[in-house]
Amino acid sequence: MDPISQLRREMSAPGVRTAIGAAEGVSNPDTTNRKNLLLLIHLRWLAVAGQVLTILVTEYWFDIQLPLALMGGVVVFLVGLNVFSLFVLRGRAPVTNTQLFVALIFDMAALTIQLYLSGGASNPFVSLYLLQITLGAALLTPWSTWILVLAASACFVFLTFRFQPIAMPHHGGSDLFALHIRGMFICFVLAAGLIVIFMTRINRNLRERDAYLADLRQRSAEEDHIVRMGLLASGAAHELGTPLATISVILSDWRRARVFGRNRELAEDAAEMQAQIDRCKHIVSGILMSSGQARGEGTIHTTMRDFLGDLVEEWRSSRQPLSLDYRNDFTPNEQIVSDTALKQVIFNVLDNAQEASPDWVGVTAERQDEKLVFTVRDRGPGFDKDILAALGQPYMSSKGRPGGGLGLFLVVNVLRKLGGDISARNMTHGACVTLSLPLAALTNGDDHDA
Image (tube, rainbow, N blue to C red):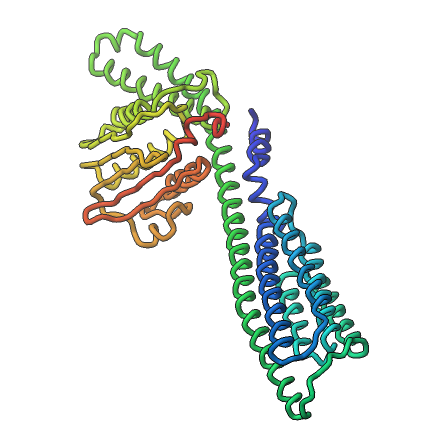
């Protein structure tokens, strides 16, 4: 497969498309809108309870006659609107700005009818329009908010000229004024409290959305980096295949020469060179297999204990550490599909541990619930604080060489693709790196084989 085709295939993957779409601002706001619709539902329940309480206190405490049947009908309408909104939330259809706008318009219409039935603009609760406009400014697009402002203003003007007067009890003017002031105070406290409560929750939803988009942009940049590295590795593997084959052929011809037969030391050097060339060929084949370009061997079904045991043994024989303390406590055993990418991930972690601690490397594999937990320990100097804080970021390394830090960067991204994660910490002597991976990621090869 040529590099251009490979790039197209990688960049058309669903995860990459989603992240790139978010990074370009084509994000799906449905999750935030659903949370905001739920906030409106909660607010409407409070409005229902507040209206019922206000009607009862006005009717039976202050002895002010109200059209209870009509006002009760508005309360029933709000309850029905909330039930309908709950069904909308349970559905799979996205919640749009228009739906939030219509919901606020219905709430404003219900408030207008209640005010119309209870004194119009002279009702101290007329300032609750400001609460709905505030919510609209936080939840809606600018054009929707301005329409809401115009609608509230029109309702206020309407209530100034058209309303049903309420039959007030026979009190003096000062008593009526004091009653109006108390009503205004109750409305002020109610509106202020609701604004603080719901604006706080709305801002939290918006912060969560912004953090989610920032994470998607970061993932998009990392995945683009990985695609480029994969193309580079795949291209290099293709290019290395021909010279390695040529060197192998020439070396085979040399080994048949008489001088190699008479010189034992030279023959041993030639054999070692052939072994290293074969190892290079194996590495190149592994790179091509990881990139999906060599599938001749087919999918390998094995068990978790065998997979880890063979992996550690292969690493031990190729790296030859001075001391490797390996303990496999993974029980009960699990049938899995061998994953080349995970093998390379574990090799990277083991290589880093050996480089930091040539004398001793400790490895433990165990099962925690439905996860594989693979722990690698060393007795080296440990991680710098900056590296721990930015674990997995590219080129974050204390090795001071070009390309340092790419190993952990690839480890983090491969594990993330498989649904796992990585953590690192310093111990009293050395460092500890823990890989956690859901077993479901390895029990079905179709999920990650590509």
